[in-house]
Image (cartoon, rainbow, N blue to C red):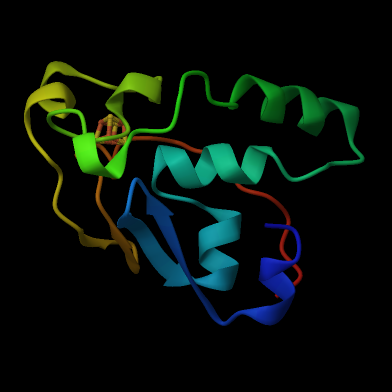
Length: 119
Ligand code: SF4
């Protein structure tokens, strides 16, 4: 991810075989709208210890969903700290949120940490 921001104008983030977020590089890194994108960004090395601590808290647990045997609802829900009953039952379709295309039921409500951008 730390290299992607230097070589891309737009980024599509995929989870379990589907695009979960698509946006211009700067906005995607600065203000991700999907929890999986935020978790990927949390894996980017950071020199600031406070920022590194926050990033550690955003890291994922659990196993990647098998695309051939996706869980019901949102495929990311077994690993998502924000999952609700709706997430477990209903597969989110991509929609526009602040210029991002994002497949998350709660994209408008979540405050997710990005990283400083150089794009
Ligand atoms: S739809 Fe629910 S489980 Fe899926 S990423 Fe959004 S908050 Fe998490």
